[in-house]
Image (cartoon, rainbow, N blue to C red; front, side, top):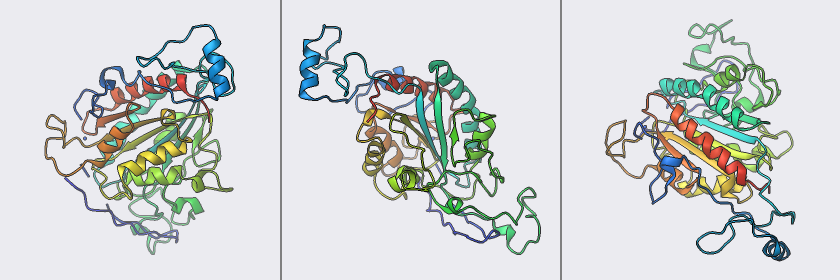
Length: 360
């Protein structure tokens, strides 16, 4: 089943509005096919793509034989880029989380399941990393700021009494892909989220982390979607590295990147192709695919035994995206009663990939 493209009106006036904008794998954790073995291990088996110079290779070959080899005789872990011996430096607990959450009209229950899964996910990672150093950004999938019922109002919006019409948007509130700090509209937070960093994303040490995430992840159900397209926007160089950029400082060279995209449709109308979306993730980490972990929670109606029923259509772009990111990717059904199992598996994948991570 396909969902019509959302029609979104961009509003720069404080009381303007946005408009409207659908779609789940089995109760067990599901990953893309193509002969991978990640469904039972949660992606714990992974490889490193680090390279070394000829001198480093020579040094590694003359060192004591402590490393294992693959079936082809290639060392699993060679010398690290600085020429030293031993294991890769790892991510040392540094993880950058990017959430792209659909705000489609049908997404309110799914957003609640996502938020309910978050505390256990973070608790697991805190137990895995002694120095868990996180950045958490929820990207703006809407690009508008305002609410239709605000037009002409004097004080507050009748339908959203906590939302004062006199509040002026910040410049980045209007930018798709920018960190969301004031979700508005039906089922949204309808307030400025209190982030201790003063940035458009949460950083380590945030008081009331769960409350802060709940605020930025409550995107509402105003019709915004296109999660893959917004993921690419959020990771773009001009969004992260230009002076004064909306997401400035979010992406760190020495951190693992974890992307969580959730939408109850195929995302057929996002700009680009699944190959483009894959390339954007890898490019964001300097060409190192092993520095990225992807979790997609979407409809599974293309699966004969899916939880959302079975009504196959054309290509499921979000599933294809997941397949292209194997083995460091997981696909989960949006129709599952909860998403904790998916996040538990992703936590294992994060730990595994962190161990082999080599900063660029």
